[in-house]
Image 1 (tube, rainbow, N blue to C red):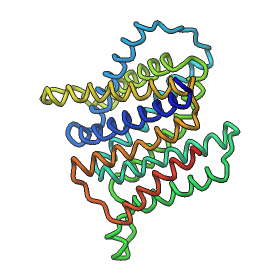
Image 2: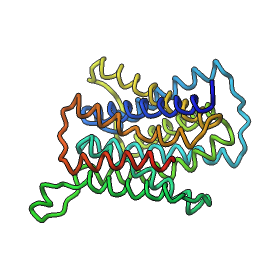
Image 3: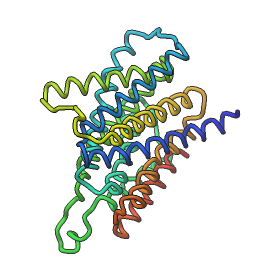
Length: 289
């Protein structure tokens, strides 16, 4: 299989997997809360990755400096998704999903400031499109018509989540380059589960699923395995494929989330918000050119 085709397939797997995970995460965040939804899905993802690890038996030689980055990455990933799921819980899923696209902007800003990476002119245009699109999508237009400025519900949480994800992807890039896709995915998942258990104890938030329907529990576990698979495939693609193809395709995950929300949840968006969502998604693609 050619490197180009492998890169495209990896990006598509990430887009579909993360898009579906975000949609289901949003649904269950409203039903059982963002913390339970995130914890149990991540535990399912960890189990599936560990099973894969037993079959492949990757090398576990990890530099001490990189080992210190795993808890940092786990904390950043947890914070990002907890804010996203909180936004899904209280807001319109389509608008929150569009606002999440800001993570690509934050990723580039941190890469520019701390990793010496620079944007091309076209990538700068893409960043501006994302910012413009998110602004259009996140505003409460009925309030503006009444001369009152107000963000839609869940937008502030989505911006906070995007900030943490922006840092996470820079840290994750360093880890994957050093230890490979499978070990990095497994250890970060383990860190997430440990963090959520500590969070549960310290905040006295129960993580039990007592009273939840069997179907709900099953779907949460499936969504966790789907998300873990998406992370693993994208990480694998980045080790042997072309990041310039993989990243923009995978980053367009909000297309899947928004489409599912409109079709299955019958969510309504205004024309300016629809334009904003489309602009932000196109901006994501442009940043990868």
